[in-house]
Image 1: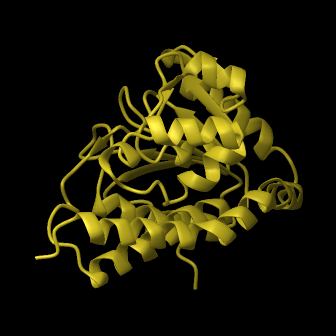
Image 2: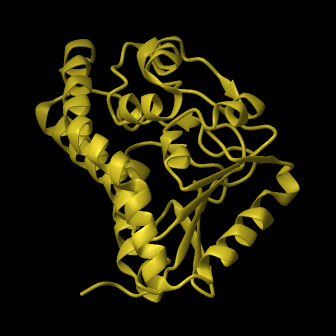
Amino acid sequence: MNRTFSEYSTVYDHVAMRRDQGVIELRLHSDGGPLVWGAGPHEELGHCFTDVGADRDNRVVILTGTGNAFLRSLDRSWVGPMTPEKWDRIHSDGMRLLTALLAIPVPVIAAVNGPATVHAELAVLSDITLATDTTYFQDAPHFRYGTVPGDGVHVVWPALLGPNRARYFLLTAQKIDASEALRLGVVNEVLPEATLLDRAWEHARALAGQHEVALRCTRAALVGDLRRKLADGLGHGLALEGLTAYATWPTT
C-alpha cells in the first residue's frame, strides 16, 4: 500500500516538503542548510522519489535546493576501506536514485538555486529547468579525482550536450555558467535568485491545471528516451566506477 503525504513528508532527513493544490515542492537540505552529499542522501532520495511518484495526489513536482547552492559539497561518509559489500550498496542506491526520479509519472520542474557541481543531473533531468544567474554546472567529484564518471553522468550529459562537449565536460571538470547553460539548452530560463522559486511555482500551477491523464501520459512520452538510455548504461557505468574504486581506494 502506498504511503500518504502525511506519512512520507516528514520522514526524510534531507528533503523538506510542502504541497499546495497538487504541486509538491521538494527542497534538498542538510540540517536546514545547503545539501551536503554523502551516503545518507544517496540512499534516501531514491526512496523519496518513489514515495512522491506513487502518490496520485501529486500532479507536479518542484525540485530545489536550500540557500545559495543546489548541491556542491560532499561529506566523508564513503572514505575508508572499500569492500564488495560496500560498493554493492552504493550500486543499488545509485540505480534507484535516477531510475526513481525518472519514474515519477508527472512533470518535474527544477529550480536550481545556485551551483550544482555534485549530482547536477538531478536538476537537469527535469522537464523544465530554471536557474539563478549565480548557478553553474560541473562534474566536480569524479574523473579529476581518479573516479569513473559512471553513476549516470556519463548518460545524462551526452544526451544534453552532445558526445564531444560532454566528454570534455566530464574529463576536465569544466564549469558551465548559467548563461552558457541557457545557450546550450541545458536550462530553460535564468532568473534572479529572488524570483526563482516563484517562477517555478507559476509554471507548476499552470501545468497542474491540465487533466491528470494528460500530465501522466505527457511525462511518459517526454522521458521515455532518457529512461531507455539509463536502463542501458547506468548499471554498467556504476560497475566500472566500482571497479576503479576498488583498484584505487584502500581495501583494508
